[in-house]
Length: 150
Image (cartoon, rainbow, N blue to C red; front, side, top):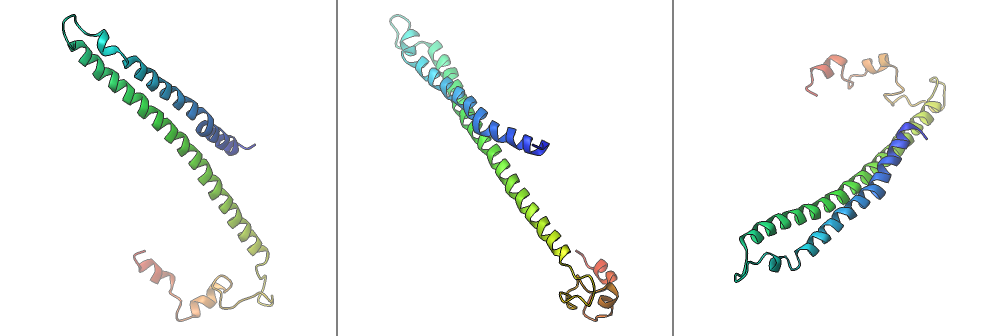
């Protein structure tokens, strides 16, 4: 396995295996935080009072921690999916590039070697010698191309 293949395999494994396991940890943390809130209000009551000011501060911190755990789980899953998508896109692009290179190589093998070759096409700019192109009136010169704002 080449270095690129090994790197792609590691990225895919991270996205498909490792990051989802980490996301489960964040999800479990969120569930545990949710469980911790059950009955917490009663635990913070002062005798003869409905609610303690400490509970309000605790509830705000608790809610923030739970939102962070929830969002971290979502972000970790999304990151894993992004890694998988990157590997898939790279692989597709690499296969397409390999196919295009193969087509070019095939084309070079079948490229006419001379004007006597039956595959020779005098109208093809690729197969027309530069001096013949320069003599054609509809072919722009190099200076014309340089003058254009490409």
